[in-house]
Image 1 (cartoon, helix red, strand yellow):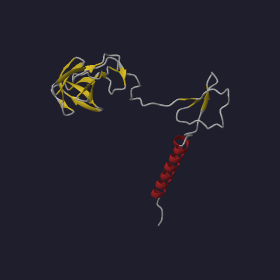
Image 2 (cartoon, helix red, strand yellow):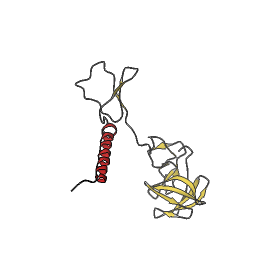
Image 3 (cartoon, rainbow, N blue to C red):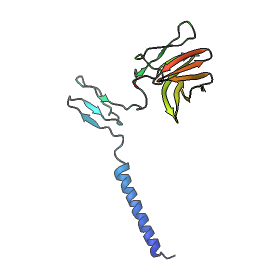
Image 4 (cartoon, one colour):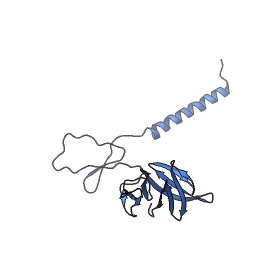
Amino acid sequence: MQMTARDRRLLIVLAGVVVVGALFYVFVLSGKKGNPVAVPTPGGSVVIQPGSSPAPSASPSAGAKPILVFAGRDPFSAPPGALLGVASPATGGSAPTVAPAGTSSSAPGGGSSATVGGKTVVLDSIFTMNGSQEAQVEVDGTVYTVAPGGTFASSYTLSSINGSCGDFSYKTTTFTLCETANK
């Protein structure tokens, strides 16, 4: 079978695309990955760049300075101790108690919370959607979006929204949760 001029041009274009792709891979995509990069600091210590691992050493010397290794963190998770307005355990009955703003704990969410019905309820945010106010509420790690009068997590009800606070009920227990000012 004989090649036509059109077939020859197609092969030349295809070969050019392959060459450009190979050059792109060599110079851009296959850079030096995973090689440790030690950067000296003005104080004389050495910092290992993120994404690299320090090279093993035979034994530390007596006058050696520590090596600092900086690791990344999830930008969507709150740093430890940053959560405010966390509930304290109910005292003597089923009525929830809410700790004052400024109290820190490892509880979920960013708003005030209460332990009601054996579950931790957190008011994450209050917002307006299509002209009606709604709240984003978290119950033991599951997030619900609910409007006033709506039921969520089987037995909890958002009774009303007043500014940055929401009035809730669980069976015969009523409680109020508010958004925290510094999220």
